[in-house]
Length: 87
Image (cartoon, rainbow, N blue to C red; front, side, top):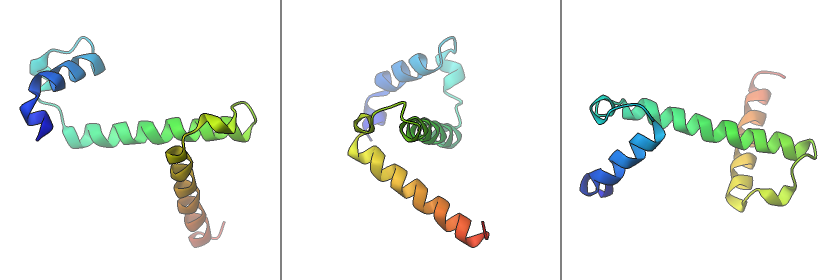
């Protein structure tokens, strides 16, 4: 509902996120595909931070409690996958 009532904000965000694209081009965006891609980007960024922490290149306090919970969730999912696939 928020975006419906604030189309100008959405237009601004789209123009910032996709420089060089016209609003007419952006009107045809596949929102579900974009949402999936943005989520993958967040996961990749978080896992990159986790790798840097594991390697001692980033201090552990650089992650928020929410990010730590997400990493724990990722690790649990990976452990389940490993157990199911005999690794």
